[in-house]
Amino acid sequence: MSERVAIFDTTLRDGEQSPGCSMNLEEKLRMARQLESLGVDVLEAGFPIASEDDFAAVREVARTCRRPVIAALCRTTPEDIERSWEALADAARPRIHTFIATSDIHLQYKLQKTREEVLEMSRRAVRLAKSFTTDVEFSAEDATRSDLDYLCEVIEAVIDEGATVVNIPDTVGYTIPAEYTKIIETLRNRVRNIDRAVISVHCHNDLGLAVANSLAAIAAGARQIECTINGIGERAGNASLEELVMAMRVRRDLMPYETGVVTEEIFRSSQTLSNITGVLVQPNKAIVGKNAFAHEAGIHQHGVLRNRLTYEIMTPESVGVKTNSIVLGKHSGRHALGKRYEEMGYALSRPELDKAYKLFTKLADQKKEIFEEDLVAILQDGFAQIPERYKLRALQATAGTATLATSLVTLLDTAEDREMTETSAGDGPVNSVIEAIDKITGLRGSLLDYTVRAITRGTDAVGEVFVHVEFDGTSYTGKAASTDIVDGSARAYLNAVNKACYARARARNAA
Ligand code: KIV
Ligand code: ZN
Image 1 (cartoon, rainbow, N blue to C red):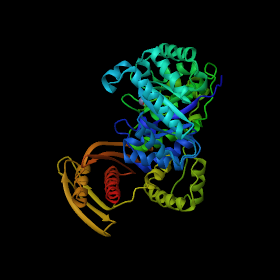
Image 2 (cartoon, rainbow, N blue to C red):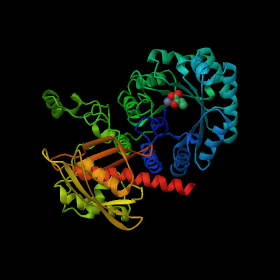
Image 3 (cartoon, rainbow, N blue to C red):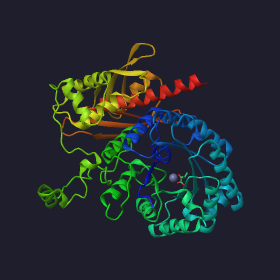
Image 4 (tube, protein in one colour):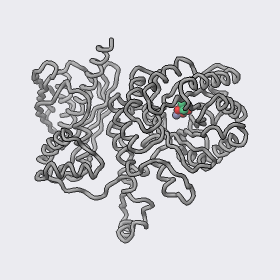
């Protein structure tokens, strides 16, 4: 049996469904490109029937990412399957992923169908999907709470119809490794045609067992794992890609499986995702958390200084965490900057380097040393694709313990090419700045979430501000990096305002 395990990434589908993790088209494309560099085998880009945006995202990811298989999710109805195929039409390697629940509890309460009906719907769905493409995946939703005899019957039937991958999801994160092992072994022993399909697993983390369950299934013979960056996903999330891949790499002695993942791209993938969504990684998160390679206790530090193997089971470099800081400052030239970006894995075109250099010199005027994190922030902040309807021209804010915070904000309205200034008072400087921006734009935003974190070191650190803002019932993320928190907050808020303006303009054009 092959020891190659396919990594099926569902960050853009199951991951994107989780609260606070929604992404717009440009953000999905940026994440998809990073996942392609990471080397995932399958990239599930969305659920095309769910919305026009999901459809567009699948279509654009399929046009952009040519190496991985691009999967699109659909239920078993003909409209769902046809819509998926439409979105996948330009893919170099398309996969239709169709699913239906097989547990009695889902059949009775959700689908209100009999077992016979669901069996027939599964057969028909795979038959139709197969008429479009050879690569068809079937998922038996809530498989781990399904009657095992019935699950075997459905799986055998869909393989007879041509399913090339059969997924056995632990949809509600209910199973445990020993039980999941038994389910996979039973399928391998009882399903007559099982050797004609790859067994896939898809685990949710409700009991914190998603990674352990996925690895148990691989040992039992599954050869595809569905997972997400940072473990994002419905409820408690999905199995975390970085944990799975590194567990197999570090414990190769017990799990001798290969994946195509370029592990050095793991940290960058994690950062890209949290940068896009504004959902920060918990500091003690395995592999990608800020403390994953930090040694605090004196005894540990002593041991690591003598030999890293004393307390490190993998090197930070193996997942792309650089431990060396770089010293770039205001005297560094364009060439040094370009070279440093190259070493970090970013090949910038000449105009991109020019733009990055401009932002770099501005930052270098504000802080003495520029670290790698600053350079990533420059790219991620300065290269955002959303057209800027409003640009911050000037900002003045005052605050104190005994005075009401006030601010004066000037914005350039690029659509009308005119500058507008407003003043406002509020509960604090950030609140008053937001009030002033709202007065100018005429949009009334409701701040759902606001996070600030220092992304570089020192008292002159760059702080990153993330906001979730709701305009007319739709929420948008915004982010910005700055050495000044009030300035960063204004820019992050404006980033969300510009996204809202862009979404409205697109909706108007589509109508
Ligand atoms: O959790 C689940 O069962 C799913 C399926 C659609 C694969 O996400
Ligand atoms: Zn799921």
